[in-house]
Image (cartoon, rainbow, N blue to C red):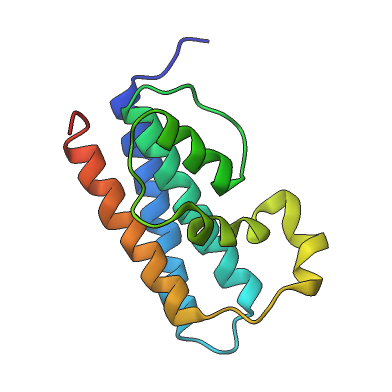
Amino acid sequence: MPERDPAELAASLARKAHADATATRKFAADFEIADDIIGFHAQQAVEKWLKAVMAIRQMRQTRIHDINRLGEALEEDGAGLPLPRNRLSELTIFAVPLRYEDLLDAEPLNREATVRLVDEVGVWAEAQLAHPDD
């Protein structure tokens, strides 16, 4: 199977991240929607934006959902992150492989802070995609 063009892969991941970010924003305003659903879409948005930046930087793609490890790989490659890695990695608990076991002990989600975090990562990622050589 041929490798995808890095710019095409980055654009595809960014589109999907935007969709998850939109879901995060809309769901955060509806208190009938559970925190784990909002957290899942926030985690997915951040993960996809990080992977989009990895793609545009032509870094090896990995099938992990651990935001801390993705952020660490980006830092090792010389990319600065928009927020401290530990702030981003707080969303990892909402990743698909972890969410069923670990959410039982999760604190209530700060919806406003989660939306701000997702938006900050989105602004950063879009800037990285627009100017990958900076």
